[in-house]
Image (cartoon, rainbow over all chains, first blue to last red; front, top):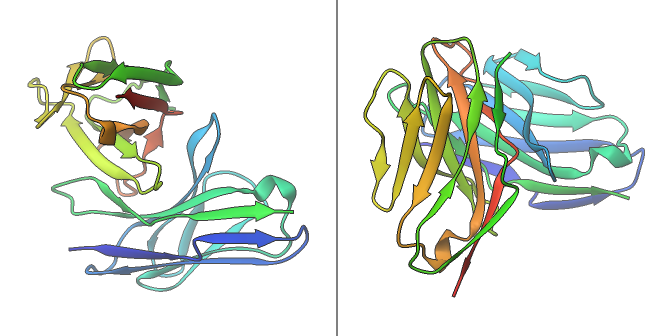
Length: 113
Length: 116
C-alpha cells in the first residue's frame, strides 16, 4: 500500500527567507503527486501537480514553485517567503485507478513572521 | 470550470443523533467521481466515502451514507449514530473523468462538532 511522508510538520520562517518542503512516496511507482494549501474559509486549493519526473503544472500564480527531481519525490519551494504564504500545506498522491482516492501526507504548518 | 459549494461552514450534532452535510457542485461533465474527506483535529485527511456518477445507487460505508442527486448536482453526507470521534472538518470533492491528471476540486469545508 502507498505511504506518504511529508516534513517538516511545523515551520516558522521570517519574511524573505527561502522555503523547502519535501514529500516522498513509498509503495508505488510513477505516481501523480499534488501540493495543496489549506486556508481558513477557502478549503483546499491546488497549487501544483505532477504526472511524472520533471513535469510540473501550476494551478495558481504565486510566490511558490515545485519540482520533482525523482519519481517519488515532490518538493515545494520559495526563494523569498511572503506573509501571505502562511498556511497549512498538504502533499497528496493519487491512489489506484480502481479507487480514485488520494492518500494525503500529514501536512506542514507554515508560519511566516 | 467545475465548482464545489459547501454552504454550511459549521454544524453541531448531539452524540448518537444523525446529521446531514450538504454539498452542491456545478459541472457540464457527465462522468465524474465525488468524495467526502474528513479532517480531524490531527489534520490528517481521511477518505470517508466516494460515489461514481454513473452509479445510481447511493454509496454507504458503515454509519456514513450519501444522497446523490445527479440532476440536482447535489451530494450530501449523512452520518448516523454520531460519535465524538466524528468531530472534524468535512470536505466535499469532485474529480472529472476521464482524467490524466486526477485533480480534485474541493469545497470550503464544513466544521462538524459532535456534542456529548
